[in-house]
Image (cartoon, rainbow, N blue to C red; front, side, top):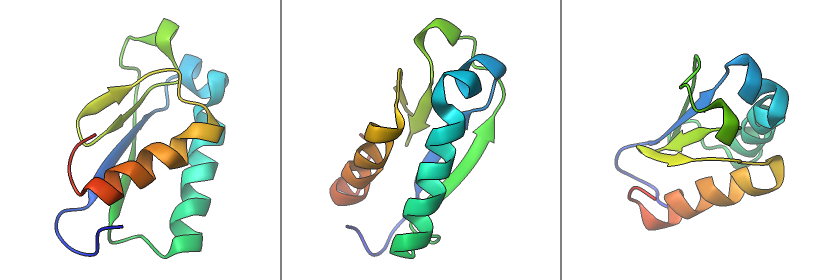
Length: 89
């Protein structure tokens, strides 16, 4: 995992469709991951209203790269990959 540089930017769509499809659980998974690994400096987590891609949700953007149909079982892996690479995924 990277130890310096810019934080990984994670934007979670909190529109009603994405939230109902799983972004509520994704948010909890990410918050737990950040807390358990003491990563508040390396990750910047924020919510955003609907991105108008509801049929592809739940949607999450990591360092500018759109990820669709993100499930709680895969969201942490996507963030871990971004941290390892130290660049956009």
